[in-house]
Image (cartoon, rainbow, N blue to C red; front, top):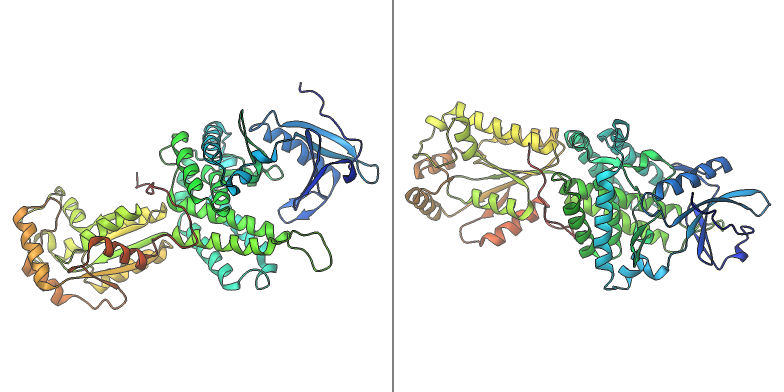
Length: 522
């Protein structure tokens, strides 16, 4: 049994050397201890309105946080309040404020990097062994995640127009719903891969201390078990978001990278889903700051809360934009460089790419190697074979979109009917459609076709110059596509143009990134 924690004579603030307020707690500092008192508040997400509820929350806080920092949480004691009534408080060992991770980050201390690395390993170790169950998993289903978004948007409604920009809040809502709505297979797969656990639920730099004996992580979410039942990425996203908020994007990327390597779960890191959870966590903190805005009738508030709320909404929207799932059509007649553009874009983004030439040969039972030159409406290019190729590309793309993977479809796309079916696929999969039409000087295009025919380049198109000319003559207008002229434009510049058109580059509001393509279909 741990020793009985020390108890102060009362909760009179004058007895303590420091008092810190949050929106739901008061922390009172005296000597080597901190006494944490729950405020008698009731918000949509927490109810501390009775002493019984506060006592239960205090006991749960000690129990749950000892999973991370057993030597910090000393216990729960009753202390007389202002009226002499016993009030339960959590007793904690006092940590040096100079060791707080947020302090190290703000002061650009050289100790911040090693601390972030140690925290990443600590969190990964916890995630490996954290409790899992079917009940826990359901709290990270698509429906449950959408409910969390709905709750936040409903709670932010009173601040729309007065504190938060109406249009930006509306776009954030639309993008969040769009991602979740089309990604139910992804959320189901995360559950089946055992990537949902009873986690921390509220990882913040203010609650991480870098001590000589290793990091101490405090203040996990204790008042609602459902909010603590999260995808491991949601836990990671909170601290990554907080590091970015403090202007340390490189530490956010370091944290994600080391956590991923330490967890040793091949499918745990998913780019689009991580962006989504970073956005969700930013909106949670936006909501908290809105609740901390000083009231006009003299109520307690926190200076700067409104400004912080606006910045956090901007951060949420930026990550939703970058993490949007996209279906990218890269088209054009043979020889115009569409495959080169598609491959370069895939390398730059980590998005999946499907080539019509490869799919066509696979359907015919052949390999990806280049067959002899083909003619229009013959062999692999007869209408039925062409239709089957596009159907199979859309089928494969649909599966990937459901898994949260953006897809590049490399094909001629000269048929308006085929393009319209791609539009329908993007709509049904809640994905952003991007259309890129590659063009090239005909002489240069013909030269490329003849050159690859001469060299027999593996995987290249088997179309001839005659095929290219006939396809160009029969191509339906494609007025809404972004045109990329590949005649003399360097490949790097083409990728930049493609990224700008697709929205796949870094949003100015996102200060960090990581190298890990989304999972392919298994």
